[in-house]
Image 1 (cartoon, helix red, strand yellow):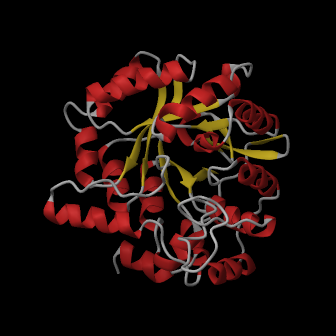
Image 2 (cartoon, rainbow, N blue to C red):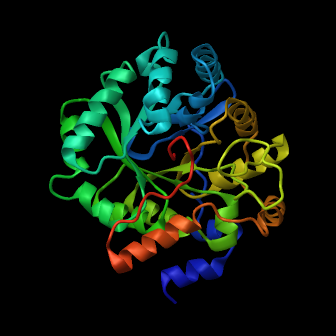
Image 3 (cartoon, rainbow, N blue to C red):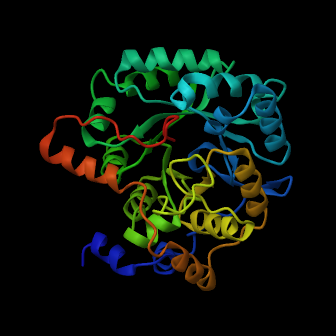
Length: 344
C-alpha cells in the first residue's frame, strides 16, 4: 500500500498520531505566564503555542490595538504574525505602533509577501520593515500559496525567493517559511526549497471530513520544517440558515470547552509548534486560556471532535479545486473571494 493510501486508511487523528510515533506531540520547552512555549525546529527559538493574529487589528482603533498587543505579551505570547495584505497595510502600521516599548529581542515577529517576483517582494519587504518599525523579521514567508505555478514562479529565477535569500544575507530576515491554502501548493513548496516553517490549515473539521493536512504534515516532518497551524478554531463554513454571529468568512468555535478541544487537536498533530485563533482579540484571549490547559488529544476528545465536525462544510475545498484546475489548464484564475481583509 502506498503511503498516501495508508494515511487515508488510517482515518482519524488517533490513527495518524499512532503513525507519528512517540514524538508525535511537541513538548513544551518552557512556560511563560502559564502559557507553554515550544521549540521552533532548527532555530533554537521557543514560541508561545498560541500566536498573535495580526489581522485582528483591522477591527479596532489604535488604542485598543495597543492594549491587545501588550496584554497578549504580558500573558506569555511572544509570536506576532502580520502581513501587508491585512487591511492593505493597516494591520502592519497598527502592530508596529503597538509593539513599541516591548524589547525587540523579547518577541518573534513574522511577516509575509504575496509578491512572487524579486522586485515586487523587495519593495513590499522594505515597506513592511518600515511600517513595523524594525530592522529585521524573525520569519519571512511567501504568503497564501494556492497554485503550483505561483510556487514555481516564486522559487524560480527572478522570483521572490531571490529577494528573501538576499535579505537573509543582509540580516533583514532570519528564517524563511511560507503559508499555503492547498495541498498541491504546500507540497510543491516543501519539495522546492528547504523551508524552516510551513503555515497551513491544521483544523479538526478539515482533517476529519476530508483528511486535509495529512500529506503536508507528513512531508513537513520528512523535510524538518516546523508547522504553524492556521484556522485552528474553524468550525467550517457558515451553514445555511445559521445566524452569523461574527462578520467573518468562516464560523469559529466559541465556548471555552470547544476552543480547548479544537486547540488540543491542532497542537497534538506531529510537528505543530503553534496555532492561531481567528482574527478577533476576544477569541485570542480565550485561546490563551485554553492553551494554558493544553494536554495531548485522547480518544474521548477525538470522539467529541468528530461529532462536532460532522456535516460541516470545508472552507478550503474551492481553493483546492482551483489548484487542481490550474494544474490541468494553466491559465491563472482570479483570486478566490475569501476573507474580505486579506487571507492569513
